[in-house]
Image (cartoon, rainbow, N blue to C red; front, side):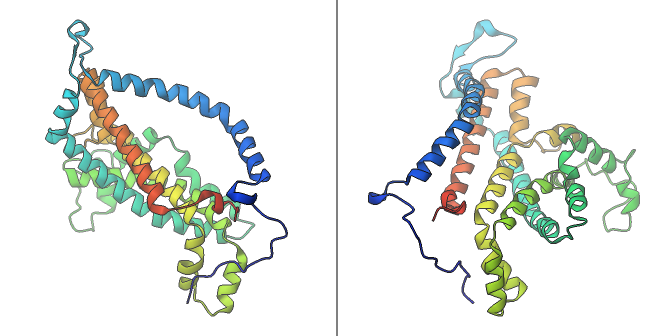
Length: 320
C-alpha cells in the first residue's frame, strides 16, 4: 500500500508571485509574525546573549573566584584540560544515556497517551487530558524528592512492594550503584516529561486530515497500515518539534541528579559538572568552559535534528 496523500485540488489563484518570490499574503503573515514575536525575541536575545558572551570570555582565563587577583589569560587551555580529562567524557556518557533512554521511552509512551486523549469520549476528554498532564505540572525538584523517598531504603516503599521481583529485596540500595541510580533518575524524568511530548503529539494528531484516514479505510488499510502510512508521515513536523525540545531539555538534565545522587556513583551529567566546577570549586574559568561546550553541544543537537528531519515548517502549516 502506498502512502496516502491529499487529492489534487484546482487552484483558483497563484500561491506565490511570479519569479519564485513570496506572495503578498505570505509577506503580510511574516510581517505580522515579526510584529508579534519581535519584542519577545529581542528581550530573550538580550537576556541570553550577555551570559553566553560572559561565559566565553571567562573560559579563556584561569580564574578562581576566591583568588581574583591572580587571574591569568589561558586562551584555549581550559578547553584542552576539559577535553583531555576522563571526568568530562564520563559526564558526556551519562548525559547521552539519560537522553537516549528517556526520550525514546517518552516518545512511545507520549504517542500512546496522545492517541488516548484524541480518541477519548468528548464527555470525559477534559478529565483524561487533565489527569495525564498532572505530572508535567509538578515542579521538577518536588518530583525528584518524591522519587528519591520512594526508592530509599529507610523511607521508600518500592522495595517492599516489589520484593517479588528478582534482584529486589528489603535491603536493595537503589542509589548505591551507577546503573540502579541512573534507572531511578530515568524513571523520574520519564514520569515528569512524558505529558509534555504527549501534548505536542496531540497537536500533531489534530492536524492529520480525516479525509486521509477515510481514504485509507476505503483502500482496505489496517490500523497499523494507517498509522505508519498516513498518521505518522503527516505529523512529521510535530514529532520533530517534540523530539527536539525534549532532547535539548534531557541533555541539560540537572535537577533530578542534584536531588537524588548529587553526582555520586558516576552519575554526574554535563550540567552537574558545570555546576560543580563553577559553584562548588569556584573555578570560574573551567566552569565557564564546560558551560560553553554544553552550549555548543545543544546547538549541534538542534542543527542535527533540523537537518535530519528535513521538515519544511512552511508547508506543514499549509503553504503548498
